Length: 93
Image (cartoon, rainbow, N blue to C red; front, side, top):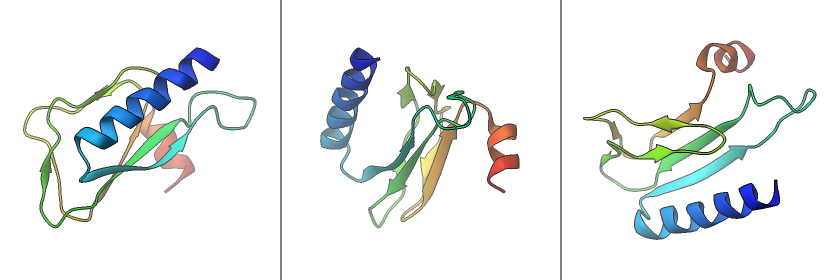
């Protein structure tokens, strides 16, 4: 558990320094009830005035996700990455 958190922190540091236009604004790690991973998510925000190509960016621990080719995040826009989109959308409409 401690190793996973340290790995996540290191990855976040590298991510933020390499791509300062995109900011991780929220991370839900091991949420209630009963510590299931169904509602884990990461929220990204494009802090720049232009769209940013995020094709191929990926998360490999906790929430696993790779952005498909030709994916851009619009200027001043947010995106939420989650393992179970249907469950997440039902919980947070």
